[in-house]
Length: 506
Image (cartoon, rainbow, N blue to C red):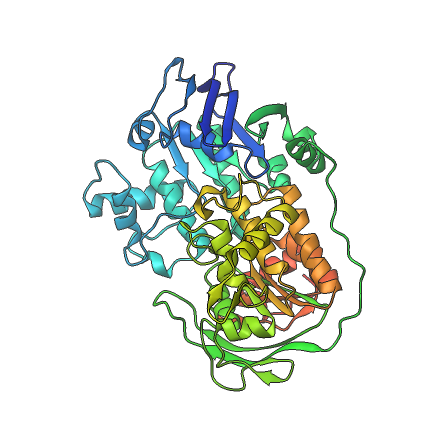
């Protein structure tokens, strides 16, 4: 690295109605530097990188690249200046091949035969092997991320922006990614890295800038700063660690007996003979690489995917043929992974989204008449109890940052006093303080007798809150084991498909 900045931001400010997303933000990134951008949800990280990538125009302030003025009016201009970005949510077409997807993201893509050779050469050079003719719908989450990275690398970026790149990866895939990023850094590529996984930041990043409420509140050297100290810099207060009472589980609430079902999606994963019981007051953690049946399992439990008789029991009652509303009435609640479009309707207000799943259990409707004042009060309670950063319940779901929408979605289900709660990726994309609050809410639910299933790729999360752990691989669920004695390596192997092997003494 050198003292001459590759990118210099000076006094960047961007305001939206009711909120200043970035307030006089300045930072410098040197060639080859891995620079972390940290902050709690709503701190302004996404707005800042969108300005760098040409998706948002700043109200004031300047940017310089290599000492020259830099003001991209669109992503194409940012890419031409040497900026690449790998988004948290993949922008790929399942039905197309790897090469076809990459071609779509290039300004002047070569012929597919030439491009395929470039993909092979670059992917092998950076330790990210990728077959250009494979259909993207058949790829794992880690392989899909490789597609996004290779698409950027083929355009020879000088600055690579990465937004939550490890949220759906196994520990083994994270190590592969980090080797690639260190190689890029050694070659002079600067990396702006956004993540809420602070131990990863400590391992990978050379420096960090911390944002709070849109302002720069500090800088640090991650390797010399504890994860807890960084988290407390982000939130401006002492971080609370989730605690549990260790209560003995009660009677069986949910009983899955040979649960099998086809996937509604042609690129999905069918469920195969899943058998497990979850008791009152117990948290069952389910790990697995994305695409191994997580969405299908949640759909089968929510009632969106109906199953044959005898496969799903709730307190002794067969519920496999009941739809979502009937299951909610019984107390079986779910929170899916996809926030916008599945868990929440993007263009509906938070009040309307509170009504969507809360109508039955919060008694927000009677004889077909909707009680909107009560729905608004319910939305306000979610916002207050789960610290959702928004001007008010009348705001549309899509106006919230990803982390704040996640807090709203989880809070909406938790506050309905479920008998069974199934959540997929409960803390995906939320900051350390919010993640701790969500985990504590799940622990409190279990303490009060709810049977909780947490599906997550965050192994630290699963080990922190789970009583038992099972791995989902190719639609099959391993035999649950006590979470207390498992190591990260053991869980990583189980998630990778080794749960049929003897991993207890790895």
